[in-house]
Length: 144
Image 1 (spheres, rainbow, N blue to C red):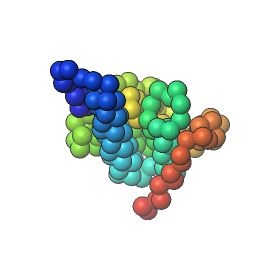
Image 2 (spheres, rainbow, N blue to C red):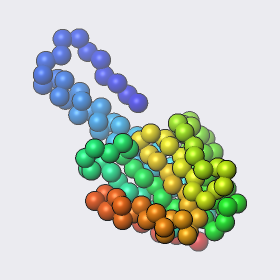
Image 3 (cartoon, rainbow, N blue to C red):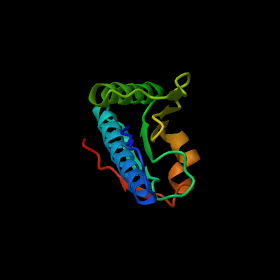
Image 4 (tube, rainbow, N blue to C red):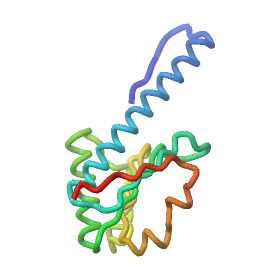
């Protein structure tokens, strides 16, 4: 993250600085989301969807990246691939990881971007895309 620091800010400079910081954070979040999608594609994660929550009020993150795998092993491999790819490309680690024990739904929390790697039946049950239907949705075409 980039932060601006200046002495003797006036109101106009403060507003511009906040706007600049917001734009930089949005750009970094978008780059992180793109790297996550590439990490998912490395292990052939299926049905990749990116939900852009930046225009939705009172959200705790900027993006959800959602995908599914065919089995516990596949879900675990996709989550590992995301972690490894993002660490190599952007030098970022998830703030928190949940669901490794049973690998039905693994959540990787990068704060600005939250990754959900599901088994298909669990994804269908929770249907996050409908729950967050006011977000801008981008379905990533399959590479294979």
